[in-house]
Amino acid sequence: MQLTPDFIRKYIPKYLRKSKNLMILVTDIEGIILYVNDFYLKHFNFKSENVVGKLYTTQIFLGDNERILEAIKKCIENPQNSEKIIIRKPKKHNKTYYYSSWEFFAIVNDLKEPIGILSIGYDISDSFILDDPEIDEFYSLVNNMTAESWTFYDTDLHLRTCNQKAIEIAKNVFNVEPIKGDHAMMYVLEEHKPIMYKAYQKALTGEQVQMELSNSTGHFVITLKPIYDKSGKLLGIAHYCLDITSLKKSQEENRILSTRFQTLINQINGIVLIVDLKGKIQYVSDNIKKLSGFDKEFVINRQFSDFIYPDDLPELNQAFENLRNLNDTVVIAFRLLNADGSYNYTLGRGIVIEEDGEKYILSVILNIDELRQKDEIIEKHHKRFQQIAWLQSHEVRAPLARLLGLTDAIYTDLIEDREELKQFIHHIKQSALDLDAVIHKIVQLTDTDKKVDK
Image (cartoon, rainbow, N blue to C red):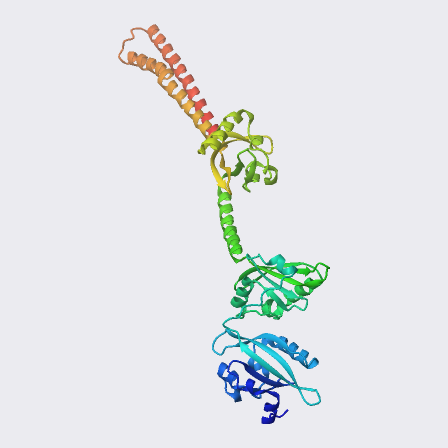
């Protein structure tokens, strides 16, 4: 259609052409811009040649194109009616938008045939807020939810309403403030579009969907819940989004800490236990199997006293009582049961810890059987050394003194006849035999020490 001054005068009233607060834009049926008034050009700082003759999509945010096409279609089908929507126009030098409210009218010729579209708009950027949510079943459910973002889409997946948290996410992730009528897929990252499209379709069949998605900004739990009216008719889909980035970070930090803690525990040549104040085992380190033969699952939730040698229980119970009442540190030796029915001598050190307001006893139990055996060996050695020392200082000294005395008498010629010499030799031989017997005792004690060492 050719634009002429007569056309402008006929179809666009003078008060609209000269308006200083309303923007006027006319397109043909194909969407080519035929006319804009001076206020439109001034408001957006355009020249006429930059706008006229161009497709209308050059003047809007492409995400609003579907909404505009729907409005134009309704105007053409029912020329007597108008359609009113809010659209966005990108600003030239940054990623923000102009928000404007537009009303669309069909322009018809003398034959009542639509030949173009008249659009009348005004800027609402300074005062724009999302339409007040409608009071319906959905709003009554989610109006007070602030910990997560929520959005309600109708059955065509067009935005009906959302809370402030959803608006913040849309601004941060998609650099756009949502408005009523936006399609749900506008607010899905490219990498997530296949999975989210399937999720929306599933939700539209009445199935609740929940998933966890991640992107460069963080981690989110997405829930899609079908919303029905009282008659059971599907109204649309409630879209909940919970930011769990901090939780994920904490879980990862705890996982790393737990791994390091577990590695440290496994390096300890003993068992780490956490017992509640009633004596029930809440935690046991993985090396319980290696050190006692019991499976970890068998030990958890059993009474600690089930694994203690009966004669050691009174002293151990007293130690528990001291920990419960005095919050003191207790060190105690006791015998601990093995899976084969035997007992090991152990040394336990326990302290009271507090977790989530509850008190527990943390204990490290060391196997001291080997140390005890070494102590026994040392004690046996000590006793034998005492015996050897006694033999050397008493039993060896007597026959040795006699030998020295007898040999000295012979050496100094105190012996006068042969019979007396025989008597002396007899005493020397007896003293030598006595000394040899003592030496044999010492050798036997020494051989026993060697067997013990082995």
